[in-house]
Image 1 (spheres, rainbow, N blue to C red):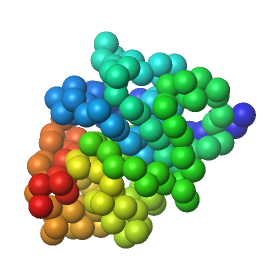
Image 2 (cartoon, one colour):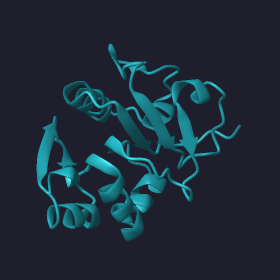
Image 3 (spheres, rainbow, N blue to C red):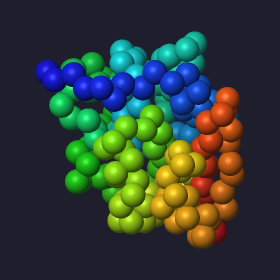
Image 4 (cartoon, helix red, strand yellow):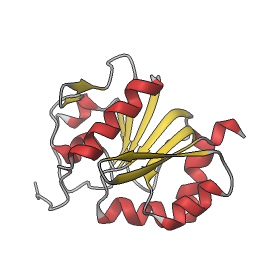
Length: 158
């Protein structure tokens, strides 16, 4: 197993991840970049918050060099970056920025994929390409958390 330097420790990102899930109560979640894996979580819980066991939680693994069998039980299904699921999701989460996730979010094909496979997409507001793409096409909300800014795009509302 190879360790990497892109572990998520930002409390605002972690809080936002769980709070959006809590408020939206999605039954199907796609976690692009697998935030729980990058946090080092060994379950669907962190900071006294959790992803409900009743929610389907799938991940697109952009950091495959870290291989721990626990993530096969935390996530219902894990997809490689070049083979995203063709299912529809209530929520797609693309936060916990690392280089691989940032690059993934800069690709127009991936943005199109998110807009057609997720009813709601959560991502960092500092990725101009993604902000421009979603704001020009869909209703969006700005979410602030202690100096961090996120966008909640609503492709299903069009």
